[in-house]
Amino acid sequence: MYKVYGDINSGNCYKVKLLMSLLDIDHEWIVINILGGETQTDDFKSRNPNAKIPTLELTDGTYLWESNAILNFLAAGTAFLPNDPLLRAQILQWQFFEQYSHEPYIAVARFIAKFLGMPDERKQEYQAKQEGGRKALAVMEERLQDSDYLVGERYTIADISLYAYTHVAHEGGFDLAEYDAISEWLNRIAKEPKHVTMEQFTE
Amino acid sequence: MYKVYGDINSGNCYKVKLLMSLLDIDHEWIVINILGGETQTDDFKSRNPNAKIPTLELTDGTYLWESNAILNFLAAGTAFLPNDPLLRAQILQWQFFEQYSHEPYIAVARFIAKFLGMPDERKQEYQAKQEGGRKALAVMEERLQDSDYLVGERYTIADISLYAYTHVAHEGGFDLAEYDAISEWLNRIAKEPKHVTMEQFTE
Image 1: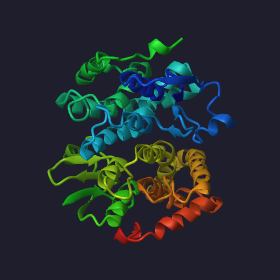
Image 2 (image 1 turned 90 degrees about the horizontal axis):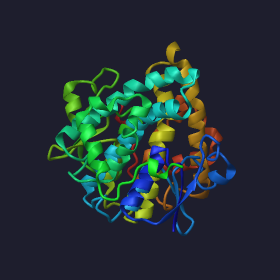
Image 3 (image 1 turned 30 degrees about the vertical axis):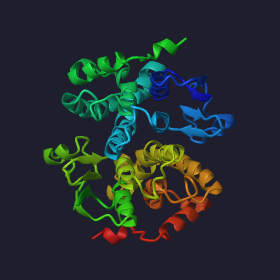
């Protein structure tokens, strides 16, 4: 059985939980507390030398890290990851966009506000994150005005990757009411069969 | 014929040039000057709404962006991208590591020093990038002490992705002499048949 080292409040970890639910993949979830320093121990670094969650442990003891790499691995051969090379590359395009142009703004702003409680010494950084986050949302909005899903007119792991932090972007100061196509897409994803929420797994 | 919109001095663009050389892929290279604002025009944003290079134009007029997505597309079916799902996911693991934990430190430090000429107002940011860059190099060093290549004991697009900015990391203030395994790996990559350098394409 797969083991997932993660924290459900992290969008990156929630991506894995959501796909595993959609695909009925049995797994053990091992809670790792980032704020408590649990990714920085030697024990954890033996699993992921980059000291980040989520980290997936396969049944043979192999570790796989980086949320979007894990999604590509778990979705291989399923409807969430088409075989067509161009569609696969377009999914990756959106996933790399997520990690470079979306997550460092929206997820970090949310982290500062929600989990660190907006300490004075990080308020300036929080403010600076707003512009980049709005740019990323504008790129998504433009795409979703033309298409119900990000790639290939169907629900894929590209949508899962961007849903994770977009659906909680308000916790980082972003007003999603300004983005009609994104708002409709978020509702569409949330209505998919076997959808799970972050809250379901929060104690 | 493919068209690549890029700047060879950008490691992200060089990745595409290097793979296309290794695979003998005929293409037109269209020079885009970032510092001159050429990624920010409406014309360019019609190709890539995220306003970044490299951007690949396929023969049917489809655009694909994000350097690592482009590598996965071009390498499909070649020795640089194995079909095995776990190896593919491990390649993606290193490529997402590159975009999140390596490029934002090493490439940005290099950009500030080499292309912006280290302006006073960005010196503090440059200094702040050093720690994250060293962390990324340490993760690579540990991996390359055990293996000649990042994934599957052969040259793959994971190596291309990380070679791009690592081989010019000294331009961002990183002393590669401290990293023996990385230094040997850089030499190994540079000796591969059909290897090309950034300098070959710089006017």
